[in-house]
Image (tube, rainbow, N blue to C red; front, top):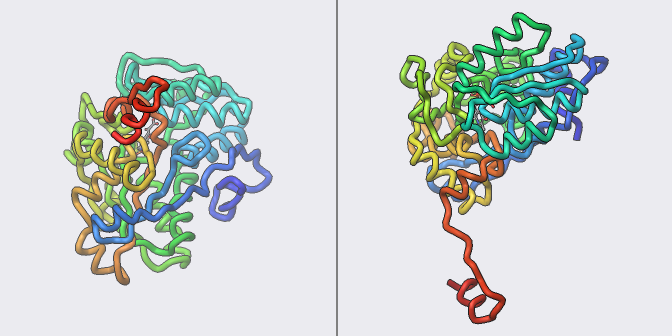
Length: 350
Ligand code: AN7
């Protein structure tokens, strides 16, 4: 399967003559979730973005951001990151033969993401400060030096990430509701762009309602003001001042949707329920989209416009393997066993 620039070249700010940097991202599974569907009385599908090359949706944006950087002749890319952007930037820079530096909040990045950034060969800088401070610093750095900034303030990132909407519609037609975790608010902005683009060009004649979910301890868009010290178990969305604030709120309003908060306890409930009941393991931030759906349900408006049972898609933005520590903190322990049949029988049958 080709990468997403090639697959959607007519809707991209690129031509096939550009130096396309791809690791065959996109084309992720859209998996029906029968048990979740029963719980919310809707046909729910999970968009498994953890199946991208580096295990998160960031690869959709990064193929575009790094292709644009390559076209401009950039030699170095930089980003601030809660982890997934760092892993993705590091991989695509490696693929392009560029140098990559990533700025991550000290101690607040999941182990898998840190391992990825390092093994792909990035310079990993641990900042004594949170994501919002890191983003401001790299914005200033990129203004002063010939370095390409690949955070989602870079419009090319949105061009790539909008293809998630195309894939959903191509697979199951127009949907009634989409739920998505919101951190820096690039992804919800990009999905809305994608749905509108398909609608405006006549591919479909409706757009879905968007429901965005933030962690309660890091919910600036819900509170209507920046959060100085964001805190949540979902480290990927531990962000207090989203860069795409206005665009995200416009997407919510235009889609007649909502931006709401889910607590860490609700996030962790969904995080554990999903693998045990649907066989799908996502990272805590991603589970916010399921936690939100379970907490708030499907709106009356989405049910009314639906043709039969409403069609709902939850975006699962990152792979559960990214964050093994949170998994171990929330499950039982392994069962020790001597190589004897009696013990084994007890261990297996409980
Ligand atoms: C798994 O990697 O911001 O609202 O620096 O990793 O577009 O920010 C990650 C964000 C959701 C939120 N789910 O998306 C970063 C970073 C996962 C994420 C989000 C992120 P945006």
